[in-house]
Length: 162
Image (cartoon, rainbow, N blue to C red):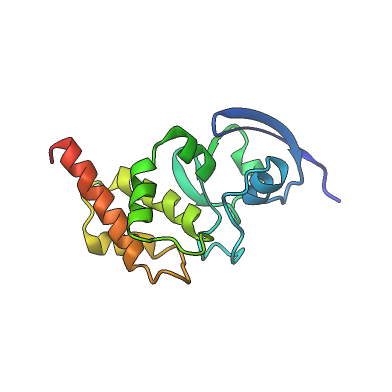
């Protein structure tokens, strides 16, 4: 059995000092050790996006990132984004467009869409579709998700006066 490692990490603004197995994945740490169940385990191969988390401002696949890699980092989960209100407009658009059904993929979709909104505020519909293609959804068929993200982009552009 591998020696436990100490991890100092700030999750959703709260500092944690924990010991973890060196091979424990970040999403398992967040879900199991911290009790934040919003991010899900899907494929466990980094393909589906259900485990998407934000580490130091960039989205990562929680099933491919080790908890020890987050040592000294700031991690945000869907719970943190929701508490901060950073994605309230996006979440409202998801509801308006029925862009969530079973909800399993929704946290990862929102995390990915948040990064798109921040890094590509002038994205076209095709760019939104391409960006969001890294997250799988079995229920909605993606059109509603793309509609919700595009609506949020347009609303934010209008607020900026663009």
